[in-house]
Image 1 (tube, rainbow, N blue to C red):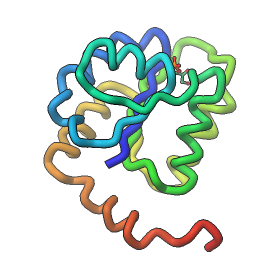
Image 2: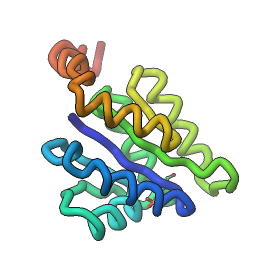
Image 3: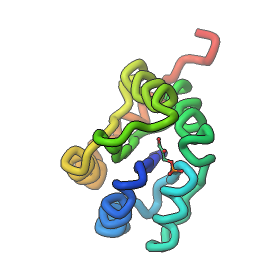
Image 4: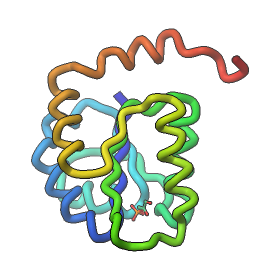
Length: 139
Ligand SMILES: O=C(CO)COP(=O)(O)O
């Protein structure tokens, strides 16, 4: 599965703790992140993560490009709901595309916990069918 991690600054510690706790579940998956989030996770785990640009510089949009093609299988996006972000339009665009494609998206730690347990149980197998039967980009 392709999994993306994104965390706003005041949520980064929470993200590191979360990914560390479930490191064994995330091993063996293709992992992606925005720039600083991925750096923090890699400093604290043995996971290999493909890091895009930092969120404010376009990282959310880079992940959004994979979402638009229905290629991302799960996104954990620990947002900071109490702090305005300069790149709010990029964030909204990413969330919207997840809803367009029906891609599992957890935006707080409680949902993230449920999603990672579902991942561990194999509940994401349906995503393999999506990849197998995905229509071409022109359809
Ligand atoms: O701003 C972000 C998501 O909107 C996260 O970006 P960083 O992981 O680079 O801090």
